[in-house]
Length: 228
Image (cartoon, rainbow, N blue to C red; front, side, top):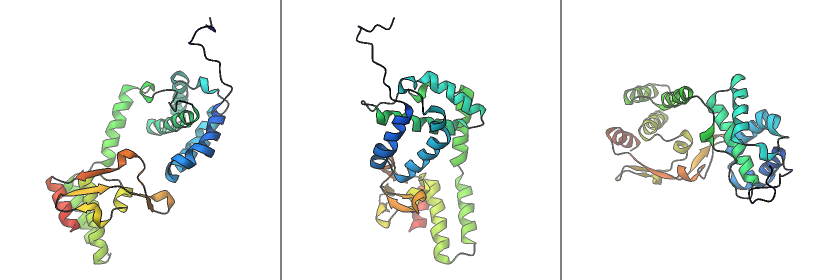
């Protein structure tokens, strides 16, 4: 039944998730990840993964066992977004320990109900979206505040650029004047401010974060005029 003489048979490893976590902390994370990413992962490890998975053989970390685990976490009151982020950390811990650097399962197989997936997408849009009229009202409130004139203009322009470009706060806080091309109406993103490390400006979190944002519509034009 084990098909020991076949090419499909693999001798089970004695390694556990605890071994993978040790490798992640001591070898992989210090070399490959930003301090902010490591900080978030530590919360996941200490509060959830080490408690629930430490003694589990790595061969038993599969989509079936993960699906059983995520529903236990759901019953404990964790949101699906939080659960997915913790699962992403588990994937990274396991893949960093494997020879082929591949995660042992795909998040596409997570047993999240379709209704909850739709609600997650809707809440995600609602959390980040606001109209241009709302943006202008925020800017006017800033301009009417007790800040000095220079700060009023800076913060009002910051809100307008955020709404027009969709940049994250860390990306906005790291912008320099030579990142703005007023003629081409573009913003170059190649650095980010790490709010977990006293606002230290450094490399972006991942390759996808390095980009040039075109502000070609009416909102973008208005935001560029405010920056000037």
